[in-house]
Image 1 (spheres, helix red, strand yellow):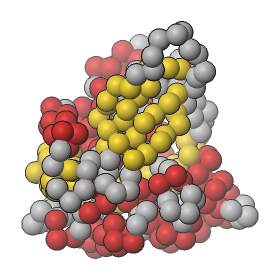
Image 2: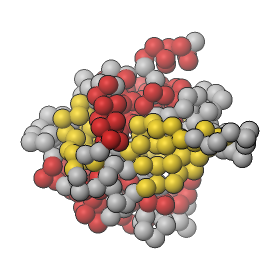
Image 3: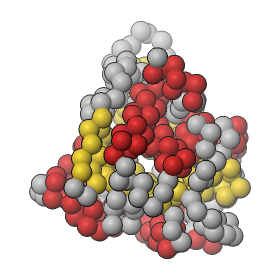
Image 4: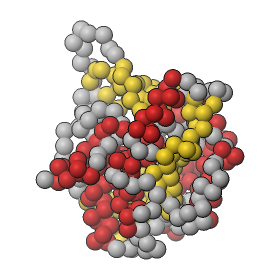
Length: 319
């Protein structure tokens, strides 16, 4: 089985006790949950029984201890986690509407995860075949962007399957909007990319969606997966398009839905990955269906790590 290596931010989601504008007269409280998209994906794969490793930097503080402990408790290899006193662990205060959709208020920058550099990589980290997964929130400052792009190049050079989830959080960028050119540079370094429908519309700007996707395929992307909340998932490869309908569930908290989805897909690819992993349409459909079940399970529970499904959870959802 091919291991999963994820890189980027681990942070603490401070989840509000309120849903929407509801106010029952009690004080609003915030409960800490371990989170951060790449860390979520590492946990998602570990909970599905796939060896996973998280690379990143945490503050030498209480929340850093909390995150390191949670990652290890869920079976993630944390030997590539670096601690620092130069900055604090990032926080995100999360509000939810009545449908569980989130609004984030980030306390980042400064944050420890932004200080990771190539010299922090464990020796030989990409020596063996692996799937390497990153997100675009490690592009928001020049130094961490350079690290992320270089790491993707290093992984691709040794034959790793590079996966990128757009996972745009515009408020993390100094201008208030994600840098389309920089995000596209990272996407074009991948073989597998995942975007929401809203992210696709933002990144393509005035380009037709099909033309923009074909540009990514021409750049070397083998499979582009487009999610749309509870709507259909579309997967595009050269000359082919798959449509998969996710299970319909009552969402409580969508925080980990997308990460559960891509984690589930990567876990399935880790079991069956071959040189033409994107071309077997029947197998790919089955893998996307599993990924959809992972996402559906996650949104029915609050928080991130604890909401991510095990194999047993997926069997229960299918039945």
